[in-house]
Image (cartoon, rainbow, N blue to C red):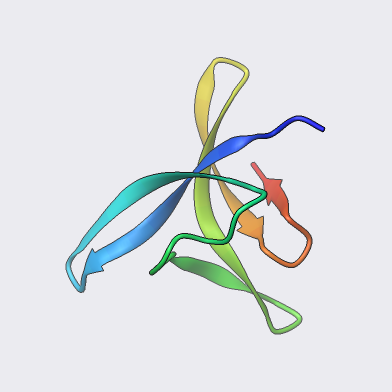
Length: 68
């Protein structure tokens, strides 16, 4: 299995945010930003390198899948 590194958006304060590297095998970084819900389960804002670019996406901690 390939370990993929993503970058998760997280809140620093009510008016500031940042990006933190993490892998899909670890938990969501503290204060991760929720992008929305599907069937009551959260998806988090991420970005990932793919095909030579940095793409926005969402991550499901339940399935450990990223969608970019």
